[in-house]
Image 1 (cartoon, rainbow, N blue to C red):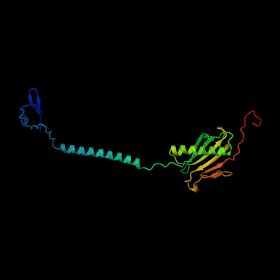
Image 2: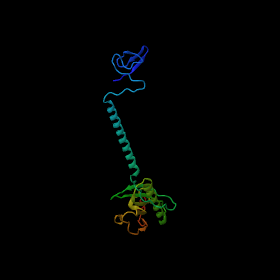
Image 3: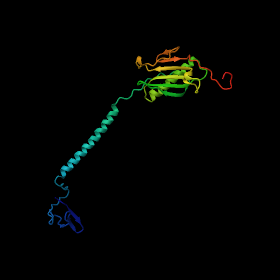
Image 4: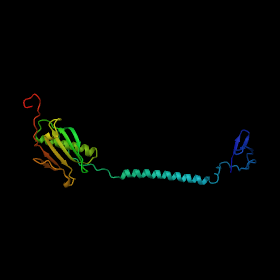
Amino acid sequence: MPTVKVRRSDGYHCFHCNSPVDEAAETCPRCGRRFEQPGEAPSPPPGARKRITFRLRRRGYRYSVIVLAASAGLLALLVRPRARPGQTLPEPAAGPTPRVIEVLDQSTRGFERLSVLAVADAGLDREGLRNALDRLLYVTLDEQNRQQKRRVRVVWAYLLPDSGASRSDWRAMAIWVDPGIPQDRWPAGIGGDAVRDGPVEYDFTNPVEAPRHPGVPGG
């Protein structure tokens, strides 16, 4: 196996056997090893070249697998179908938005459904109650379907006289149904005196008893 000459303060020496050698010597007089010429890389031992080549190929294969896996993951993120957000409503006429006190998730049969309870301002007439319902539905769908990218398909909206009232004591209510839902899967309507306008059904005829207070006649 070839070796090299090492220059020291007392002259040149064979790197393999540490024997003094002449600067121009081509072989070591002691161990007989050939000296590599300046700039010549030492030759690998028998079989080492194959091992090096195998390691390089294996390392290149490993890097290729990592790169391909990363590329496949990135491509999957880019081309995968994004969840299509649900419907929204046009913004209604200007007016105060009712104060929401509770949102109930009532999803079923593969459809996302919500019930929203809010407090209506006292003294609103029917037109005011309808505008309040329109704003409540608009804000709910905008927040859920546009901002949060959900697909809420049905919303029950209830306007209550105060935050302590039960849902059955609503002053006005409405049901919004996504027009894309098949007719045979639409929820049951309100019925009675309810009026439908496009995807929304309204009702303003639920009687609400005056609240009773202890110590007050009739309370």
